[in-house]
Amino acid sequence: MLNFTFNNPTKILFGKGQIANLATEIPKNKHILLTYGGGSIKTNGVYEQVITALKNHAVFEFNGIAPNPKFEQLLEAIPIIKKNNIDFLLAVGGGSVVDGTKFIAAAAPFKGDPWDVVKKNPSDTSIRNIPSIDTAMPFGCVLTLPATGSEMNCGAVISKVNSPDKFSFRHGLLYPQFSILDPATTFTLPPKQTANGVIDTFVHVTEQYLTYPVNGKLQDRFAEGILLTLIEEAPKVFADPNNYDARANLMWSATWGLNGFIGAGVPGDWATHMLGHEITARFGLDHGETLAIVLPSLLNVKRKQKREKILQYGQRVWGITQGSDDARIDNAIERTRTFFESLGVKTKFSAYGISIDAVSALIEQLKQHNLVVLGEHGDIDLKQSELIYRGCF
Image (cartoon, rainbow, N blue to C red; front, side):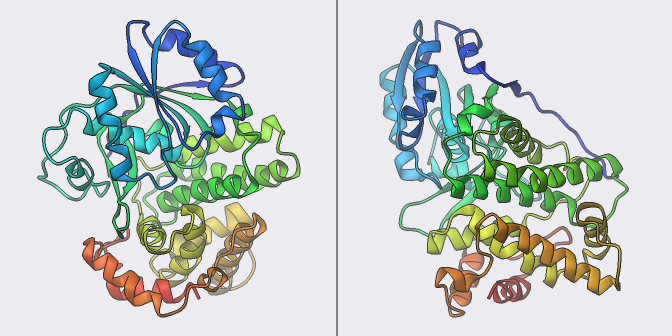
């Protein structure tokens, strides 16, 4: 097992009726900026619960945070913060709202170009000696869409308008102070959003699990448990969207998929996400859709380097024990693709009308964003990335 330091300060309040505890989690003397997305929280009852809980607090609002939150729009929150002496942020929504709120929390007190919050605090922790933020506003979260794990980590992903720029960043100051997870808030999610969330969680886990063995037995078993839970519980939610227990298991799986635990002491490979971000930035596909496209191809291209872990994955998660190593690897990759397709998410570029000509543009974006060395071995260069993209057809 590799050396690691693990610290996660986020307090979790899980279950029915927990939104009411906002009243005690946020001191009454705080000026709160409530951040949310397109307004679905006003139709599913979450907004009313939040406002009721905070009836004795000073609450201001900033709404309209879009999927793949945009830098330019998020900056509009800063004058509201300054004008109203806001000293606490409350994100109510899915991962995009939480990510956008993390950016606002860092950008509001930042001295300098706000884009440096993103550019100079990259998620790639191998980059050293870079300027960094030194303060951030406190914030909490009420989660309504399990997917990104942003409710219990310090990372975020931000895009620019009319640009191929979509970057992930992280900083230890950007953990939520608390996150409220009530599975009942997810009952009204459209099937597509539920599916995307399951896939995002699934890939978060595989990127920390399908690398190479370092004898991290607890991390492996925990990762396999999350994957098995997703496979078992997702069909139940599609059969009955109001199945509280299934929703609860999916929500808790998403949180644990990226809260740092299963990645502690083991190598990580975030190439699927990096390659997927470029697809979203150019073609506007949902994040989950891009991951479903990229992961099967990446596992195939890197099958030699990931051989031992893919075989373990095939046996422990899919029960694949028969056949040659290559046949078992093929089977494990195909079972993964079939699972994504069973959720109603397509796994080929052609299903989205994207032609082979797109590959050169995507490779150019990787080059522009300096994503030229990816993977747990640092061996996914631009030629390897091109092979992966071409395998998506």
